Image (cartoon, rainbow, N blue to C red; front, side, top):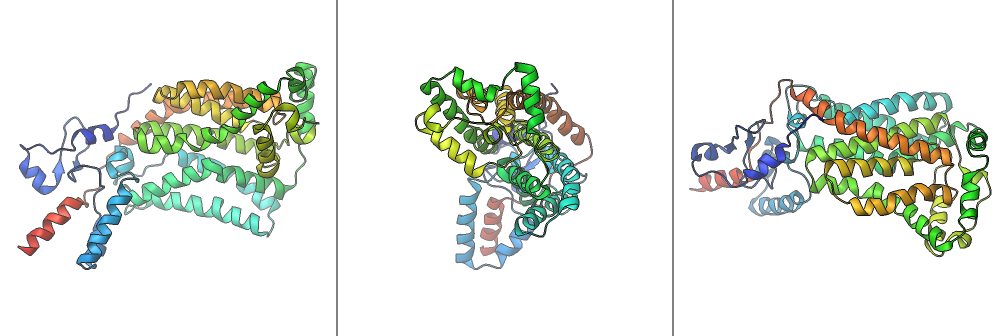
Length: 407
């Protein structure tokens, strides 16, 4: 794997300024020859630099207004990343930078737009899905990446991160359900069932729970299935705020790539799943409490046609591999939940066996690919001429200038 340094670690080492570099400190800069680029030192790097636009806005406020603004800003900056949290590639201003997540968004648009054009309906759900996912999101990414004024800007970087979160945490899944419903295409369950019969001589999604008719095991499987929502929702925020930026980018690329591949297959090869196409057992027969919750969630919130491949298996596998090989943390929780989740997709009748196998393979392949491609991708763009934003000053410098103006 190609090594990639994380400038955030270097910046954190420079939180306390060197007393021997008085001249540089007075100008608000610190430079480390071991770091890829020089950065403005705002005293602690806990606060991001102040842009000229913010400085102008702040100058229009009175004394009490400035104090209120600074307090709000400091509170927000405890929870939002500062510029030192990003990689040098994302901060470059001279050259165009395209993230891997942007590539996946382009691929999704190329795959989904033909379906919109062929089957478009002027209903509120379809129009909203089209405007939000195929107009607004690509436009935000295009403007944030192409505008010289926005390159390396904190707000632009936050917006592109927010787009990734939206797609990974439900936006893409909801859009696929809308497209499948809009197109009204037939489901391919009978074809998958034929494959299951040829491979196993039966339907594992029906027979598994009958062969293993132990309610406590069924309850464990349904807990694992339910905990998928924790695997989906928590790793991205945790890695965003607590781990190096390169770790977060690897995980984001892994999850979005897995969901993108699954979503494209869902749209063109919709499979309803055995829960809807075959007889399934009632919650009382396969568990105690959580089985009722899981079946209720499936019946109330699932998008029909998204069974093959299983995103539950794909995302859980991809996340497990990405987290384990980047940070090495959370091994026990993933080990206790993820294999049980794989089996739960079949035991509960939520997926065909082939759905789960394909989901696991897709997640594993894309996770390993992301681990290698992410640093290569960043290093490719870092070889171009670039510079960090130089028109920013620190909040501490703002205070110093105001003090000097009063003397």
